Image (tube, rainbow, N blue to C red; front, side, top):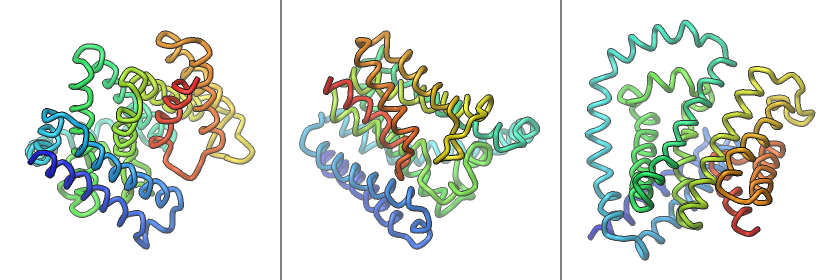
Length: 282
């Protein structure tokens, strides 16, 4: 029974991502089209893989993710008024786009909880939490599209989401989709360190680029040379304690390449997978 329910949940999310990628509003943004269609493909793949391979405990977690999400959303909406008051104080210090972008990337670093979970709670718990987060974030994103009044993270979204992202799948959701696929394709150890390094490298690129970056990349004015150097250096440093120097160097080069090329896909979907692929093949 849990197999069927898990299959249905992930398939429905994949269908939503597919429909979102084909919407007229989405078609104005090529990056969002490709990202949502790739996310749909990943979700369909995960649905089939989980149906065929996963343990009952993880299937049970995916099944329970729906009531857990509903209860969490109700609880978080109760807390919104006091959080709204806190937001009014924070907004005094988050007035310009540069500050918002830096704050946004600090939120990205919360993904480092993945390596803490793996270190102290083990592989199966890490996978369970990842799928719970995937379904929770995707369902709340759908709520943001259709019933924004009840979106539980509207206070945070107002501070960190860019204006053009309000009707798009959130970067945090793309990251968790990528995390789920990386955990399936690679060993848990490789996946965790690759995703950790990707989060650190991506965040440092934006933070350094926005705060001290002065030399723009000729083909991408939103990015800076300083930010790209920071992405390479921090990714390399993050990987070095866990793998050989050669593998760490390759992982950092792959992240740097994605940052410089800036492909028309949300980088939260591909950074971790690219690093895990590189260090595995080497």
